[in-house]
Length: 446
Image 1 (tube, one colour):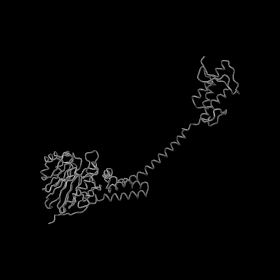
Image 2 (spheres, one colour):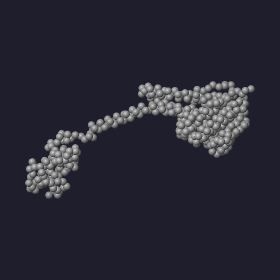
Image 3 (cartoon, one colour):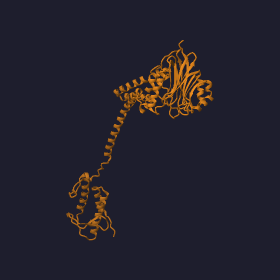
Image 4 (spheres, one colour):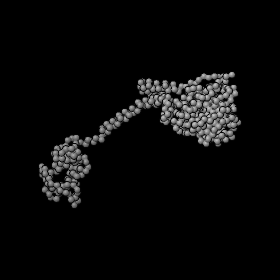
């Protein structure tokens, strides 16, 4: 006959579940009870309850044990005590009390209960709060450090790739120090606010010349000048010629001039507006040119440069001879040392220009006002038209990206004159904005 379980066996099973929550162990105890009851039903002698020793054998109906002569209570206590001994590191032979302690009998939740989870959540919350607090405290310091880095880059003369490229965005780094002051004041960190305020004051001192402007001679000859980078022959020639005509440009300097661009500009009518020219075209970015409304003489092309550098003398009525330069040093991404060397040599060219006449320089210098190597060119007779007019940050590059222009690397330099207005113009197809300046030249000596 197949074996069956009755109610006493289930009661023993529930007792075992209370003393030993392990499902596997409970099934073993039920199997023992089941086999013991089967032995009694077959006429075997019942075992005295006070008997400790028992014999065990294999049940032919299951994989658990049955006993012919044993104390059932002792067996259950022995089994439960052995399991608990394994869990609590008690000796396996230790006698377990008939009534287990309440901490073992109760259905207390395991360590992963709500109380412990609440403690864990509290610990994690404290850790997260600490990180957030440290992050908030570090934000104004990072902003202040960025502003200080911008000031350092403004004065740095290092010819290393990273400082030179980072100096191009020095004004943006300096602006972060203002955010540092605001955050420090919001957090009531007065010492930090003082440090950030010092950085802001120094940063403003470095950028103020671009907005202050300088007075000049108001009675001199007014000349309108344009500097444009054509992106080889990518710029729209008709748009450029229209701007020359509309703004009454008298002197035009161009970079990245190709033979095809010369033909396109001539076909658009540039030669009729500016009939005099001195050009050195190339099929790459090396091409440079000068167009003038007035006759040009003393034309020079300077050797030893990667890109073409030109100069000429324009005979401007009521102003006399005026030196005109068209420069285009290599970008720093080409080679930092070559870039710095060419800027230094071009500075020497300007220093050797005739001092008895005004001079106008237009070019893509591949350097911003915050590059100390560029500002060195402004230490003598020459000054930046943007600084003279107080036009502020005039960004010219790049215009062929999805983001707006970020840096101003196109410049017009002046000696013996004063810029009264400077502005930028969009030229379709070019990657630079054109730069125009209205310059009032000093009166020629009689």
